Image (tube, rainbow, N blue to C red; front, side, top):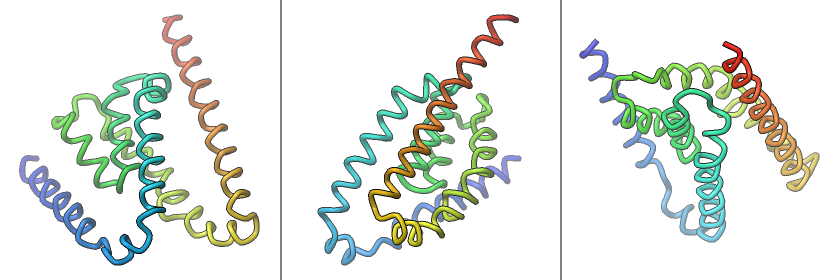
Length: 160
């Protein structure tokens, strides 16, 4: 197990360094205004979701589970795993498994999967605001489902 942990740690370091090294400074400079707006709005949303939504939806170990999602949302899956390992290095919370199971659903659909492939077609057919409305509707659905599920879980625990 210690050898496996060391190999995983080195592999994670390589992934993070490679991701940072692949950023094109010319493209970033040419689109700086758009990048700043997207960054500020994205960071604000991530902080809001972590502070206000995560404790109300994630029933067990919300901080550990939420910090992995914050890392993923602010970068890539490797960033989420890195933050998760920092706050729970011995995986006492079980948040790493939760993160991994979530990824089985997330990656094929959103993280470089079906939605990513369909995005150009959706923008062409629905327009930017149409795609914004579609994704806002999906967000609303999953927020409602998350709060409903949390309520059901808490009621079931009270009955025990």
